[in-house]
Image (cartoon, rainbow, N blue to C red; front, side, top):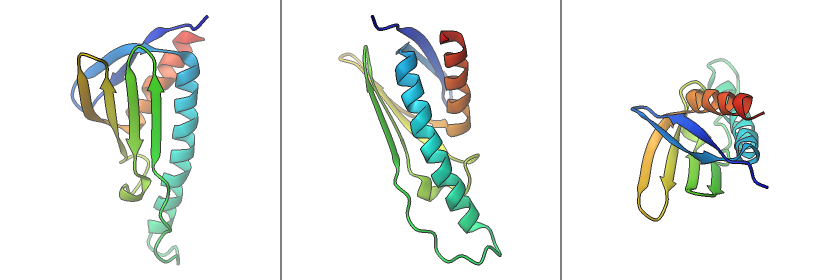
Length: 120
């Protein structure tokens, strides 16, 4: 049996609530962990005096979930100077509506952690 509960994602303006599974949340958390490593590496290379040349391009994060809704979260680590400045593009859709917007990465991480604390 798949356990579904509702997650709230806080956006730059407003929020969105939808059904999500703890397993999907953990997969998103893992994808974000990889993204954070890329962002940290990019930020370290961009630090003045680091002696490094141009940083090598990092792969973007592209997370997808299909359940009651289709959720896609995308982030290109090459355009953000630090993990704290990073934003993600969120697409949430079903057969009646499609929402495409932006959210702060740090806020998405907080929302996921809160959801998993409540779900476990």
